[in-house]
Structures are given as structure tokens and as C-alpha cells.
Amino acid sequence: MSPALSELPPPTISFASDNAAAVHPAVMDALVAANDGSALAYGADAWTDRVERRFAELFGTDVTVALCWGGTGANVVALQSLLRPWQAVICTDAAHIAVDECGAPERFTGAKLIDVAAPHAKLVPEQISEHLHLLGDEHHVQPAVVSITQSTEAGTLYTADEVAAICDTAHAAGLRVHMDGARFANAAAATGASPKALTWQAGVDVLTPGTTKSGSFGDETIA
Image (cartoon, rainbow, N blue to C red; front, side):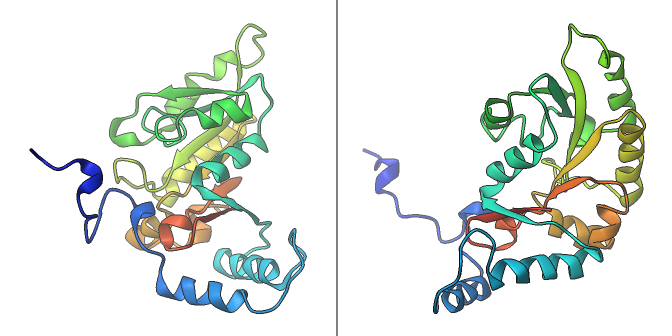
């Protein structure tokens, strides 16, 4: 008989998810260093201040940073800060918030996801425009946020110009733009664009930078 799955040794290397990988040694060293002594909780500490200053340096502007647990939690909190229960999020049908996060965004925000079929998992401005006729109709949820993933679930990339085009269309209709930066560091490296060019300079309102997938220890950020 074949051994049960639970009896098999774990793989030496797993490519199933970045979340299955070990924490980067530099991150673990930093955790050990932070564990020395005491610090006030709830953001009134030197470590939180350091995070905010590092984000400001990375993005070239003042950044408000909220720390939370995991990518799903970050996406939920980010979207919840932008939505009312009668509103909706336009995203692709491959988006993490529509597929991989197991209903958490709709459950905890109380808002609906309008997930549209998108070639290669990339949203285009025309797909936003197709749903703007719902605005002002009291019988339908009101689109309020556009959410895009960078890099996408298919591994494709949004250029800075493509992000800007999406943001221009959304903002013209009064919608906000959320970027799920699940693999944001990879996108910046692959496109050669700076973090600021791919986000706030292109018009992105809220970013979840994907720090868990960049080697951190379970934590995530909202910027």
C-alpha cells in the first residue's frame, strides 16, 4: 500500500507558494534583535517608526503604514477602509480576493466583488467602464473600488502606463484603486520601474506590498 500523505517526508523545496518557504535569514536575525528588551505596543515603538521611514524612503513620499497578519488580512483591511456595505469591487476572475482568499473579502467587508473575465489575468480600463452604468442605480451595488494584482495570478505584469490608465478611468468615475502587491517586488524587478512609478505616481490609492512573499515572517503591510 502507498503511504498516507501525512507519512511522507516534506519536500526539501516547495514551489507551491512563497508562503511555504522559510523566512529569510536576515528577517529572522532582525526578529531576534527586536526581541531584546521592551517596547510599547500599538504602534508607539521604534520598530513601527522605522518601518514607516523605510517605506517613505522606498516610495519617495510620506506613507502611512498599517501592519497586520497575512496577505488576506491585509487585503481585507485595505478594502474595508475604502468600502461601504452597498458598494462593490471590480477585479478579475483570477484575483486573489475572488479566488484564493476563500470569500474573506466579501465576508468581512460586506461588499460584493464584481469579478470579470480577463485575458492573462489583467484588467483593462474598458472593463471598468462597462460597469459604470450601475452608478446611481439604487437597485444595484455601487462600484467603488478597482483592485488589480501585481504581478498577476498568471504571472503577467502591469506596466506603469497600464496602471495609470486604469487609475485614470477609475478616478474619473469617483472610484479608488487598490493594488494587491502579492508579488510586487518581482514586478518592480521585472519591469525595471521604481516602486513609486508603479503605485502612487500612477494613481494607486492603497497598496498591500506583499511583504510575506518577500521573505518576512507572516506579517503584512498596508500602505
